[in-house]
Image (tube, rainbow, N blue to C red; front, side, top):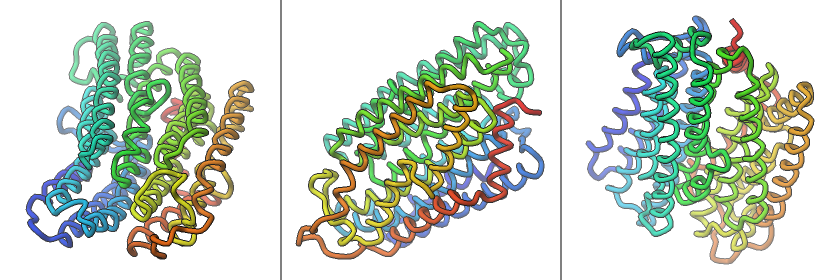
Length: 492
């Protein structure tokens, strides 16, 4: 079952090249592949919840699932399923308008599922070297999607994405090399030398000074891919220029996989040092800097997709803050926030895609009357803005509240003060900039009604999930998050 997580998206990606002129067949392959992948992930997660972990004896045991990467896997496959279905309605509309032809449509879906494959490989490997390779592979696969439209802005964004993330990943490579060096000088050469289980089990024997330096390089390197400030500069351009379904995956899934890499290394360093003070302080500082940078830029944005992109930087900062506080409550809330942000931001980028296709602009000042023109999309988009800014009863409110309370309990009063101030600024930015789009009299050229039946259904499903989980957390998800938190907190 574990290998099916890799085989399914890779096979799906290749199948598109067997199709000639049938859009319907392309859509069927896309939806079927995503549904099978999600089903396989649930079967694997069932085993993890029952047995604690899944390991493989093949390839030196580099494939491994426990509750921590199982949580990331769940978010990845769920969002991938919903966004793949959303892509059918979105890309069909572009095909009808002759914005893409059948060859470009085939290429889009091939790259989309290849991108999903690289993210899953990142998630389920326990070898940190392979993780580094797969994170770089996510850049290469998604860069073609960022530049999919082949216009000046999208190509510029794709190159900026490749260059900045490649520089970041080079820093991460130095960190991985130092991590392996620490393992070799302490434990000798072994094929297990970069496997997370091996390093975690022998963390006390690793060279602490080298481990600290390795973590710094990995934090900068993978933090660039996460979009943590000040390494975030690629993110607004890439997320705003990519097709909206791709923006949803970049923001809702890709950032999580890089954050997961940081968390894995952090647990080894914490176990080696016997506490989380060193890693926690760095995570808190980077988290607050990211939230503050996002707040400033959100206040002045005139492009709604760039506003959503800066919001992703904010929420990655909130997750980093929660992980850095390192209490049981903050870790639980931060992991829950990963799920909440994935679903909420995917919903918002999907809604923004509908708006863009309807109005043919991303400029906030040129859009008004969304609620009248597109009642379902407009309602979901409006509620999504309140959700992403942390308003109840949506799930992000619950996780943000948990992080705030934990910071108070741990005496991080200065961090709480900055966090609350930044959140107020972000809410003000969203309110002053984006709410104007929903009201007023729409232009007569814009027809009333949704463009298709598929995209509104996906939006409503996502809205329902983030509303329900804001009030009630399913027992399986609660157990998964708690078990993942125990791994980070080194609870045995």
